[in-house]
Image (cartoon, rainbow, N blue to C red; front, side, top):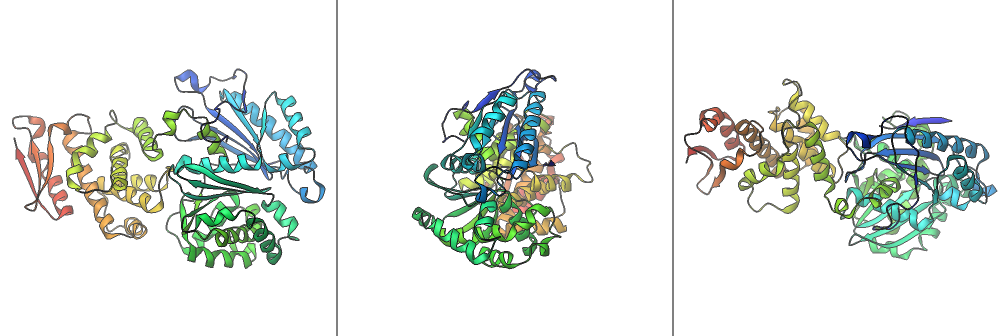
Length: 525
């Protein structure tokens, strides 16, 4: 068995559906330290079997453990109608290992999901019976519609207001779900995962694969309703495709989630990759040899979907069925939380010096941003929440380390431009050099002079706030920051309190004034 470690019911369904209570762990579970027990999900796919264990009790699916075993259960199924015999044995062993690991990790409820290969194989029910008997578990076999909805719910886990078509490409099936007004509007599932499409098209012959895909997609005329919306591409094959696209574009950020292509760029790149020998991309960073072989068919499939849906853009999502299952099990109150702000709040609580008070900092600097749109206000709040969590980095490298961590950490709910904006704001909060190459590259990604300037204002305001307050909550409320119509920015401090001696923050005020092109004024009241 080759293993590789990596760093749903419809929304509102039964959170316990398909879960298996596990026996007592031999090591203390997370729950014994005061944290909720972890959530475990085993995904038995056509190509691989994967276990992901997530931290429990949080809005965001933070993976504590992630491992897959490549079993190729669906290999040859198009011809035989049965599971690959060798893959069946490997999958039995993998599931046994994953169940044992879950017990050791203190997982109290393990969700075991099986998808296209198991549901379509003649010997699928017997395989499920063997798994359940050998491991004392319950296996939930998803039908195509359920698989499509779970993948869409996984996208919504990261982007709650996602609109358009979610397409999940696996080894055994291509599953589609149209999202409208946060609901599952239409679903379809086709037995055209990469393993099956390769067999059906005579080994990936392009013209035949295109004919098969076009005929199938024509059976879902509702795809045309996504005209001008977003096509979300989910699945490991398309993540590999995104790596190649980034490489070909010389893209400055190696973060797969929310990597976005315009339709014009997608048409050019997909056509190129569909017609090129896969070995041409052997030097692409992070691209595995197994994924490389499937690149042409993955590109052909996405290209035909783009033609069928006519979207405004293609967005690659790293979240899918497993995250959908995680999301489905959350209490309603957690489901309603903003995934980005939830991520930032968790970080602030874990790494901050004092009690998190980002909302206080954000409200204090709000007068600097009149008529601020809600989406930018949300991003500014996110920066304020994590504006003091890098205090323990070495002072000589603090700005650089904070920048790289914010730019690359797996935050949910962020597109790449917003990610660059957050990273630049934190970089300037710690006094980073605006002329440094990393900052210039991030400004290029942000691609908006007004927003670039905004990051410098937020950074300067954060720097002033934490110098003034020492990072302690409750202090800023005793002061007032104002942007005066006469061309000045004024900080009002309480008179007679040694904590608020204006001489100690003068340089910070001057920098804030320069960032706004306003005259800095400190007054006592």
